[in-house]
Image (cartoon, rainbow, N blue to C red; front, side, top):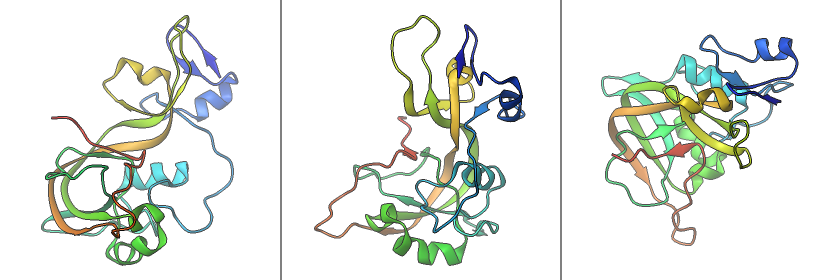
Length: 195
């Protein structure tokens, strides 16, 4: 990696060009293909980006379930009780009906409690990745930073996941954690927006 006054870049110009999307965002390069069972809260970066951009199911890559209430989303619980899921930002893609049934058994983050939402608007608003400090600024790279497309920090992030903001949400069902587990901490893929 090379940090200049205006951006972070891969030292190899060919890798740098291949790792940028049409908006100029630099993406983490990952080798290999996604294998094994999906962990819905932490997907392979290539699969996550593809499913988020195309609104496909995180589990099977089929189209996400839709009905009159909107697209289906299954998210781990936040670390505090919330009365509204409006404006939540997430790096977890939507799901199809079949995967919504089986994913709570397969994903440890969902077994700790989850909410099923119908979402009418899910705008791509930014990325989550490693935010590098600007040239001559103190600090170390911040892993897991959520950076909006409108942020001046965007040119200093190496993206790992696409982030959508969920709006016009309706809670379909809510599954609490077992009493012995308590509420789980918010997974890095999910951040609530302060309103």
